[in-house]
Structures are given as C-alpha cells and as structure tokens.
Image (cartoon, rainbow, N blue to C red; front, side):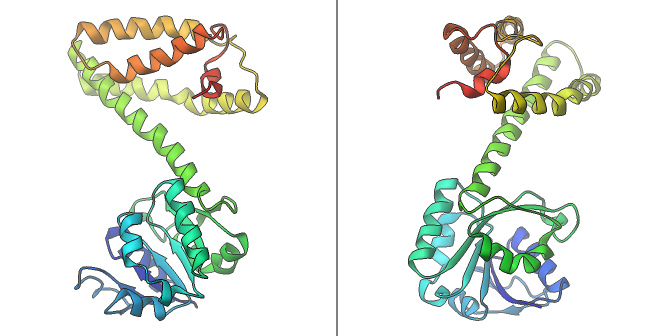
Length: 280
C-alpha cells in the first residue's frame, strides 16, 4: 500500500482517487473548490501545500498546466515525486520537468487516454514519460488507474507528443465525419443511410495505417496502390461537389493544397505516405 496525494477532484481526478482508494492506497486529496471528495475514502486537506506534505507521491490532475503551476508549492514538493496527469503540450511537459528538476522534485508526465468511468478498469489506458527509475518505482501504484499503462521513455514530453499525434488524427477525422454527413444531407442522403457505408469503408484503415508506417520507416513510397496524382483527381471531384452545395471547403482544400505541393516537388507518382515526409 502506498501513501499518496491527488490534487484536483474534477471528474477525472475523482475517478483517479476512487481507483486508488479501491486499491487500498492511503490517499489525501485537495481541490480548489471546497466540498468535493466527501464521498471518497480519502483524507481531505485544507490547502494544496498540506496535501503535498502528506505524501511522497503527488498526482496532479487539473484543467491545464497554468493551473498546475498556480497550485504547486515548490517548498512542499521538494524531495517528492510529482506525476502530472493534467494533459498539455510537449513543450509544457518539458518546461514543468525542468522546473521540477530545479526544485529537487522527481517528475513524470502522463496522459490519460480514457474517460473517467473507465479509470481502474481494463479499458483504461495511460501514457507516461520521464525518468525510467521513477516510473518503475511507482509503477505498481499507478497500475491502480488501469492495466494499459505505457512507458514511452525518458523525454518528459514524449507522452504529450504521442497524445497530440493521436488527437490530431481524431479531430481531423471527426471534422471529416461531420462534414461528410453535411455533404450527404445536401445531396439528399439521410445520416442513417450513409453511416453503414462509412463504417464499411473505414474497415481498411488498420491495414492502411500499417502500410503508411512501413513505407515511412523504409523511406520508400511506392505508388502502385494509388499515386498522389490519382488522389488529387479524386479530391478535385469531391471539392466540386462540396462547392456546388455551398459547403465549407477549408479542410479539404488545405489537404488538396498539400497534395499539390508534393506533385509540384516531383512526387506525384509516389504513394500518399510521401506527404508525411515532406518539409513542413
């Protein structure tokens, strides 16, 4: 059993604390808004500094890094381990790691890739980065949050980097999905009529991701399964329909412009993976 502290009792912080107490870890909590945590089997501290001083391991889960900086007490943290699960950018993670180092604090940065209701279950997934010895020391305790814990390396910004990459795919995909429904509706196709076909089309995505990763790793982008120039032709057809229906074409036009840059650079006969290797 480990003695530890959780700072922040929003929905995720509450779920983290519940998972820790369910695993019989002695837990102290603090929240900026009083009154939260009364339903938890945890000790409620009056101040952040008091909560930090109660434990050698401090887990913080707040809205953003700015709030984390406001809350952390460097004097109270000295000699302790800080695990930040607030989420942010790789730069913010590295800057906070530097701050922690300057104040004699061991630091792990983490990203939760799950909803609060899955914390403590086999469905939960978390990424961690920072000193490996620190991660290994507290890995059994952190396992209370979920079985799918991935240590990504010493660079404290690596967890946030992977998360940003995956979120990039998620939100551009979500943008494409809602735009697809808008275009289908503009052409008289109901959402429930197009949805099954979308799911069928997306069935090839896992194999496509593997193919793109393989080509990028090898540095070779054969276009035998579809060239960039051929992709441009299809995108032009879609853009014509989008514009004919007076729908926003910003995202697809941006993608088409990226394809054109590759063609202009002489890569038209190569495969789509070549775009990921183009200069920024």
